[in-house]
Image (cartoon, rainbow, N blue to C red):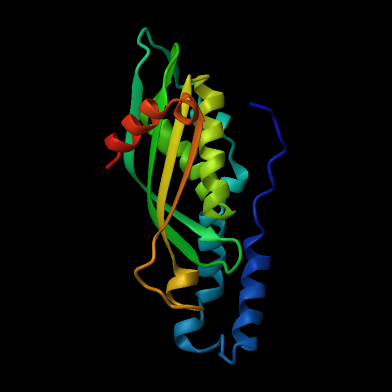
Length: 193
């Protein structure tokens, strides 16, 4: 995995000032009782919700890559996912399933979820998130193949715009044997149902 410079920690005081200004522009009184601490709370929340910008897959893996003698499919499903749509700064949430066929290396099971969070905790679109997780798992394990499926609900579609509350977006990324071999792909898809 290549090394890239990570962004600095966000300036929470500056963010709080911007939130205060936003409240005024929205016609609110940031001095009223219920909003007094809102700017600071929003600043802390945004720093937390975008912490993935300051992480790398290599960093969250923390060398939890192990030799494995078997060449079989590993699947982790129903991983909860929370992210922010980069277009509206509204949440999208759902679940993720990751599968890979190990050649000789496996990663610690919790690290799969950590890799997913590394990319989900950024301003994101689901399509890119799906591809980033697949590529990071592939790079970490040098797997024969990788499959990733996200099923998410987007508040930018549910509570504004077209207001379709029951809509769910499904994205998948298939690499290596998961893309090339129909039987492998079908095995993965049947295991994540």
